[in-house]
Length: 139
Image (tube, rainbow, N blue to C red; front, side, top):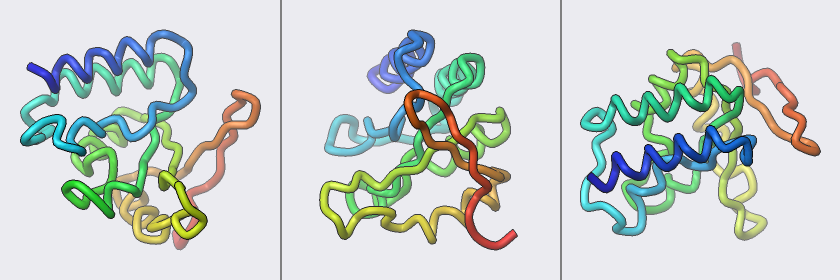
Protein backbone atom coordinates (compact mmCIF):
# COMPACT_ATOMS: atom_id res chain seq x y z
CA UNK A 1 0.00 0.00 0.00
CA UNK A 2 1.31 3.45 -0.95
CA UNK A 3 0.83 4.99 2.52
CA UNK A 4 2.57 2.14 4.34
CA UNK A 5 5.48 2.30 1.91
CA UNK A 6 5.72 6.05 2.44
CA UNK A 7 5.99 5.71 6.22
CA UNK A 8 8.53 2.87 5.89
CA UNK A 9 10.67 5.24 3.79
CA UNK A 10 10.26 7.95 6.44
CA UNK A 11 11.49 5.43 9.01
CA UNK A 12 14.52 4.70 6.81
CA UNK A 13 15.15 8.44 6.60
CA UNK A 14 14.93 8.79 10.37
CA UNK A 15 17.43 5.98 10.81
CA UNK A 16 19.86 7.43 8.23
CA UNK A 17 21.34 10.04 10.57
CA UNK A 18 20.91 12.73 7.91
CA UNK A 19 18.05 14.60 9.53
CA UNK A 20 17.44 16.52 12.73
CA UNK A 21 13.68 16.84 12.24
CA UNK A 22 11.25 15.18 9.83
CA UNK A 23 9.08 17.89 8.30
CA UNK A 24 5.28 17.49 8.14
CA UNK A 25 5.56 13.71 7.94
CA UNK A 26 2.06 13.04 6.64
CA UNK A 27 2.23 15.42 3.67
CA UNK A 28 1.30 12.40 1.53
CA UNK A 29 -2.34 13.26 2.32
CA UNK A 30 -2.00 16.61 0.50
CA UNK A 31 -1.85 17.47 -3.21
CA UNK A 32 -3.85 14.44 -4.35
CA UNK A 33 -1.07 11.90 -3.69
CA UNK A 34 -3.57 9.58 -2.00
CA UNK A 35 -7.34 9.73 -2.22
CA UNK A 36 -7.97 9.17 1.47
CA UNK A 37 -5.77 9.11 4.57
CA UNK A 38 -6.97 7.74 7.89
CA UNK A 39 -3.97 7.32 10.20
CA UNK A 40 -5.78 4.71 12.31
CA UNK A 41 -5.70 2.35 9.30
CA UNK A 42 -1.89 2.63 9.26
CA UNK A 43 -1.17 2.80 12.98
CA UNK A 44 1.47 0.07 13.11
CA UNK A 45 3.69 1.49 10.35
CA UNK A 46 3.24 5.06 11.62
CA UNK A 47 4.17 4.02 15.15
CA UNK A 48 7.23 2.21 13.74
CA UNK A 49 8.28 5.50 12.13
CA UNK A 50 7.65 7.42 15.37
CA UNK A 51 9.67 4.85 17.33
CA UNK A 52 12.58 5.35 14.94
CA UNK A 53 12.35 9.10 15.59
CA UNK A 54 12.50 8.45 19.35
CA UNK A 55 15.33 5.91 18.99
CA UNK A 56 17.39 8.32 16.87
CA UNK A 57 16.66 11.19 19.31
CA UNK A 58 15.35 13.47 16.61
CA UNK A 59 12.19 15.54 16.14
CA UNK A 60 9.16 15.70 13.92
CA UNK A 61 7.86 19.01 12.69
CA UNK A 62 4.35 20.19 13.39
CA UNK A 63 3.49 22.31 10.38
CA UNK A 64 0.57 24.72 10.28
CA UNK A 65 0.47 25.09 6.49
CA UNK A 66 -2.03 22.24 6.29
CA UNK A 67 -4.61 24.53 7.89
CA UNK A 68 -4.74 26.52 4.64
CA UNK A 69 -4.97 23.68 2.09
CA UNK A 70 -5.88 20.07 1.49
CA UNK A 71 -7.99 18.75 4.34
CA UNK A 72 -7.40 21.93 6.39
CA UNK A 73 -5.68 20.12 9.25
CA UNK A 74 -2.29 20.50 10.89
CA UNK A 75 0.58 18.21 9.83
CA UNK A 76 0.88 15.65 11.21
CA UNK A 77 -2.71 14.65 11.79
CA UNK A 78 -3.88 15.15 15.40
CA UNK A 79 -4.15 11.36 15.90
CA UNK A 80 -0.48 10.97 14.92
CA UNK A 81 0.32 13.74 17.39
CA UNK A 82 -1.49 11.76 20.11
CA UNK A 83 0.74 8.75 19.38
CA UNK A 84 3.83 10.98 19.21
CA UNK A 85 3.06 12.49 22.60
CA UNK A 86 2.46 9.06 24.12
CA UNK A 87 5.80 7.82 22.71
CA UNK A 88 7.87 10.83 23.79
CA UNK A 89 8.55 12.32 20.35
CA UNK A 90 10.16 15.77 20.38
CA UNK A 91 8.68 18.53 18.21
CA UNK A 92 9.79 21.40 16.05
CA UNK A 93 7.18 23.78 14.64
CA UNK A 94 6.92 25.44 11.25
CA UNK A 95 4.52 27.25 8.97
CA UNK A 96 5.99 26.84 5.45
CA UNK A 97 6.67 30.57 5.32
CA UNK A 98 6.88 31.24 1.60
CA UNK A 99 5.92 34.87 2.21
CA UNK A 100 6.39 37.18 5.22
CA UNK A 101 2.72 37.05 6.24
CA UNK A 102 2.86 33.31 6.86
CA UNK A 103 5.78 33.35 9.32
CA UNK A 104 4.46 31.78 12.52
CA UNK A 105 0.97 31.54 11.02
CA UNK A 106 -1.47 29.72 13.35
CA UNK A 107 1.14 29.01 16.05
CA UNK A 108 -1.22 30.62 18.58
CA UNK A 109 -3.90 28.09 17.61
CA UNK A 110 -1.67 25.03 17.49
CA UNK A 111 0.31 25.51 20.70
CA UNK A 112 -2.72 25.11 23.04
CA UNK A 113 -3.68 21.94 21.13
CA UNK A 114 -0.15 20.59 21.56
CA UNK A 115 -0.20 21.38 25.30
CA UNK A 116 -3.55 19.59 25.59
CA UNK A 117 -1.95 16.54 23.97
CA UNK A 118 0.79 16.55 26.62
CA UNK A 119 3.66 18.29 24.84
CA UNK A 120 5.53 20.61 27.21
CA UNK A 121 8.29 21.92 24.98
CA UNK A 122 9.44 22.67 21.45
CA UNK A 123 12.83 22.39 19.83
CA UNK A 124 14.83 24.23 17.19
CA UNK A 125 18.29 23.73 15.76
CA UNK A 126 21.40 25.87 15.44
CA UNK A 127 24.32 24.24 13.70
CA UNK A 128 22.59 20.85 14.07
CA UNK A 129 22.52 21.35 17.83
CA UNK A 130 19.04 20.95 19.28
CA UNK A 131 17.79 23.72 21.54
CA UNK A 132 14.77 23.21 23.83
CA UNK A 133 12.26 25.89 24.82
CA UNK A 134 9.15 25.64 26.98
CA UNK A 135 5.92 25.49 25.01
CA UNK A 136 4.86 29.13 24.69
CA UNK A 137 1.56 30.22 26.17
CA UNK A 138 -0.42 29.65 29.30
CA UNK A 139 0.35 26.77 31.60
